[in-house]
Length: 165
Image: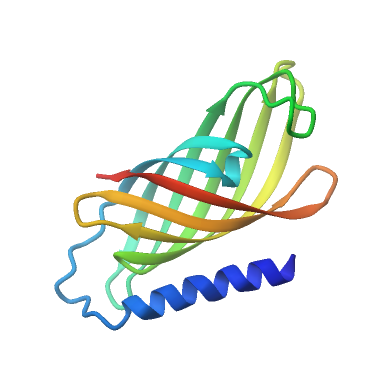
C-alpha cells in the first residue's frame, strides 16, 4: 500500500518537473470550474464530478479547491451493494501547477442505500496528475487510497476526462 502511494507521488512529481522547464509567465490563469467523468476513484465505479478551484497563488501556482460527484445505480458486484440510490463523493484538494498539475485530496464518499437510515462511508486520500488544455479540455490519471467501513485500506486507480470553464 505504501509502495503504491509513494510511486504515484513520485510519478506526479516527475511529470510536474518536466513541465517546470517551460516558462509560466505567458500561461493564462486556469479556469476555476470543471465538469468531468471519472472511472474508478472516489465513486467506486464511476462518477460525474464538478470541482471548483477557490484560490490560486501566482508564484508558484498553488491552489485549493473542492469537488463533489454523483453516481446513480446499483452495484451488486461491489461490496454486495444491491439496494443503493447512489454514491456521493466530496473532497477538498490541493493543486500545484497550471497546465500540468499535481492534485492531492482528502475526501469522504457517502454510499446512500435504499433504506435512508443506512449510509456507508469511505475515507479517501487521492494523488493524481491533471492536464488542463488551453481550450478547456481536462485529462486526469492517478490513484486513491480508500479506507472502507471495516478499516481496510486499498488502492484504486482512476482516470478522468472532461472540460473546464
